[in-house]
Length: 501
Image (cartoon, rainbow, N blue to C red):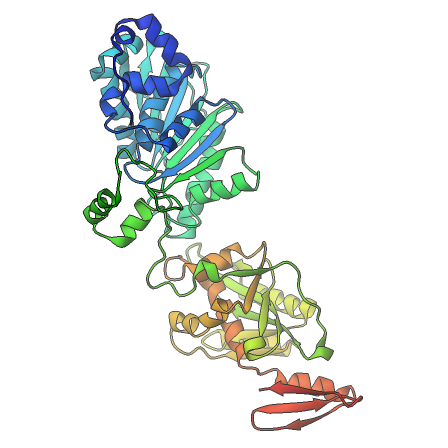
């Protein structure tokens, strides 16, 4: 960052010092945190300062490359300026992933208050205490202010400093690679922050979230989506080391290609470089279905069998009868199928079944789907599922057993080209968990929805409904001629249509 020199008058004059720094976080940093300044200030860093100074930027979400200074600016300097400067905060809460991390966050501030002569004169005295939440706390008695550091697992429900609830909450790196691996752990972080941490404040409380892009469904990415969709009032900024023109966003520290290459070699691993510096969400090398292969539809096509394109409704069913919370779920995925081979399109219906169900409940739900959609039920024909097939047949359902070949990864790999070619289409809403399971197969704890979909697609791709379509057409007054690889149907008006098996 760009040093500010020749400030002896400001350094000596406490009144002048406080006047200049009251309005400007940028000035505050360059006066009190001069020892952090080694390079010219980057434009993206100036933008971060501007966001913190803007009262209309109620909530701020920042992702920036490793070593960008985001934590120093937003998690060390901002809490102190928010107390000393114009925001006049009385209760700042800093949230870390673990208690050790929370302690380090507060230790950085404590060291500034202890060792920074200007800060000590302007803010002191302070003292460190432990509160009822076993969090580390700094108090600044002269200003009636407190800074509290907690881990994301600690409850801060009802936390107060005197009459003051938190007026600034900073979440710094509350996720890591492990915590973003599964949907359950990602949901947990989201639930804790939105149900525990944010409500601990008031409608006027500012939330600041800083971190990195570790997963396409991470909490930061969820916040970004909510901001874009105007479901959450906030400002989102992402600062990779190189911009769209492949230029360094911090020319003071990385002035040329050689300096960037040196940093890249220092990291030594391409995936880490992409994730930590380029803010690229790294796709695992063994991922079967890539997120960019997911296609959506706005509306379902018509069910017109006369065109010989609509083949019917199908439901893939992956059964599980354990009621244990950690056990697999019963999954039922229903789809509308059109066409064959390269012209096949499978439209996944929204809101698939994914729940712990008893055997009788499974039969009831499957029968209801069959009756409501006219769907053919595809059930894995192994173990106790055989009994389910027999019961559903006895109940008058059109059901067929599916004998799996190979493991789940192999089965998903065999149908992956249908996703890549855009033949599998999902609704714009209502299949989020299903999409998570197929794009993160091997990482997610559960894969029941993926397995049900895999059975459905495998069955549909075999073209077993050809005879049904021809029977329907013949019934309407046409005739068909069958060849080895195709059938030619002539309707009552003499129009011919070729159907490939």
